[in-house]
Length: 257
Image (cartoon, rainbow, N blue to C red; front, top):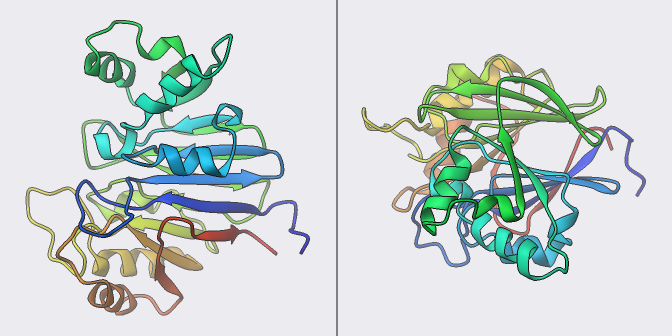
């Protein structure tokens, strides 16, 4: 099948939260591919082997890290090792993330310059940027001191809006356009969300999708102890469109066929 030039592929490499009992679960990691260009959204625990199986990691145009919780960035460590030691000379890949990402990685090894040996890290900020064929819009959301949600599109086609970890659904309104696909964390299932946890549950995700005109809701980042069926029902109580969970190795086309 020939895809529309504005379409791209979403490959789920990891959809797990910080801890889980689900076999095969790996931390947050989403590969977006358009023709010969690919970017990565987050690189959580255990996701590097899936990335290396899917494509040559050094060919990524960029890795975008939404926030500085390890379940969203810690596999930058094996990625760095791979780039440094697998090639002669070492290769480099562009990485965009919140302030302090390089220092976090360097601190894990108590080695200043550890990350810079193979990762070209630059500050992610709000606004729109072009990375290869992709238009990427970043917007701050409530979670850590500096957390981002991302909208990715090709040309004027429908986009994928990735919530990252987000404690206030309204923060995503600015990113979602009618017809977009929403890839949303739903850490606390059907809810409620504890007062001190900046995360989302199903009811607010459903209401968000309805008011913004999302075409499809993809659910991810569900903490162990929360039921998938109950979570789905809680989203569908507020949204009458298609809703499903994503798992590693899922592949979906974003945009017109």
